[in-house]
Image (tube, rainbow, N blue to C red):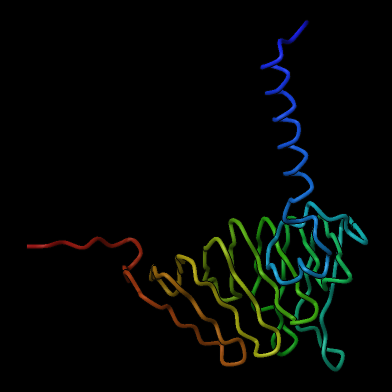
Length: 192
């Protein structure tokens, strides 16, 4: 296959452009620069440690606060981040498991003690209450679970929908911001 001079010029231009994109790519900076980005996808970096079938327990004074299982965990030590796949977290209060959260992915910021769960997040309480959302976060310092994404909560025969959610773990109290509806399960609304 032969190329005329204009085709060769075009091929060289494309090659130079591709090389420039690779050299100037945003993730080509230092790893410490990426710490400022809160993202689940650090695929451009190689993990310091990769583990399969992980179980991590966070305890205080010998009592478990939570236990986290993950199918896969990638640890980025310098950034203080652990990225996980297929996670389940069991939360304990007074020694009893009172919440279970499952998600497709998660990220644990070990320095700030914040866990973010992404994709098909499902929370279920020991009482049978449940929550569905796409993103759910836990701040360990103030024991707050929250989501700033659309949530659907099933609690005590009600369906509650809203655009944000806060659960204060020490008080076992939750708030739904911008509540859209509260409907009794199994009943319909009629308008006359």
